[in-house]
Image 1 (cartoon, rainbow, N blue to C red):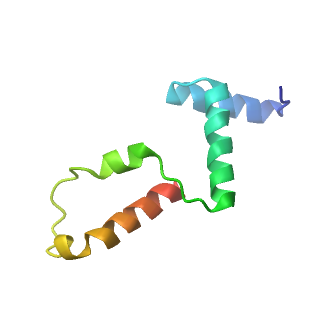
Image 2: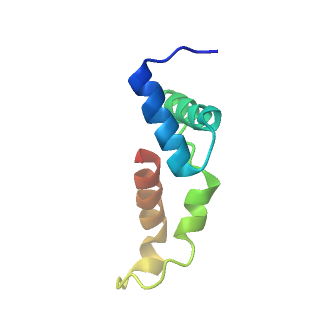
Length: 81
């Protein structure tokens, strides 16, 4: 059990409802993200990889040569979310 300030509780309840999850699940995700960021583990959720698959035309001509760099950049941006 944890105690929250009223405004924090209200904001978390609103965010959880917006995402369609329970407050407990939202708190688990937030705590997991916080601990991951602090540990520097760089864990990226599996959904991040799925969002990168089949993104379509990029207009770039060097994808086959630089795909690792582009993937690393996309994952860094995803982790920063």
